[in-house]
Amino acid sequence: MALHPVPRKVGIVGYGRLGQSLVSHLLTQGPELGLELVFVWNRDPGRMVGNVPPSLQLQNLAALGERHPDVVVEVAHPKIIHESGADILRYANLLSLRVTMATHPDGFRLEGPLATAHCTGPRTVLYEGPVRRLCPFAPRNSNTMAAAALAARSLGFDRVIGVLVADFSLKDMHVVDVELSGPPGPTGRSFAVHTHRENPAQPGAVTGSATVTTFWHSLLGCCQLPSKPGIHLC
Figure 1 (cartoon, rainbow, N blue to C red):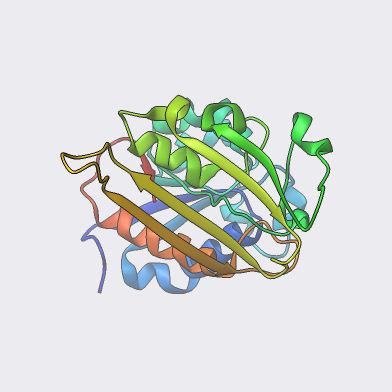
Figure 2: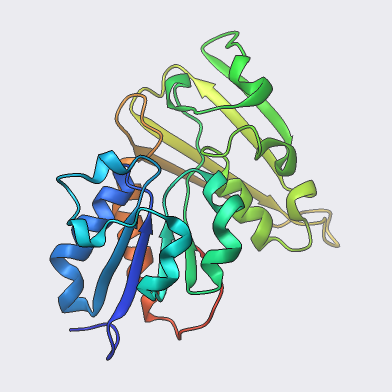
């Protein structure tokens, strides 16, 4: 059964592991769900050759408006959104999804001063502080933190604390812990919530195994919403 009476046109920006999975789902299941893949763009066009039909390969991201997308899914480097996000929003909704984790050092893709940080033991805290300062140096590993900062409007990027941990024991999983505490009440006790997530992952992989499925279902959920311009974080 289609999600929408009129097919929703979807564009994919990025053709790594997640992009490949979404393209495969859209080509095989999209038509029956009312979703039409209208373009795929990648920084290295050669990766799409032989895998993406030539008619769907977009060589110039600035020309995406010619494909008339309703939703654009960004699964590339965050620099792409910095450079082209405003242009994308002129034509379509933008679904931006990433995952942050505590994992084996090989699973990080760090930049700037964090790229040269050394592990001092089996479990090393590489960074602890405001999310705002972390994001530029861990653009592929801080997105859960960034989403939390956007959701917690009263705290924002300066008051949400991010912690990035390199743990040699986590060879095949990404672990995310979220701790939330409120102000003390009349009894002196505070409301607190702690969630713990373990996402299996291939050794050295930035993307956890469950994340691939999550992206597909996030796209389906996004396409069920009323058509309104904006960025969707899932």
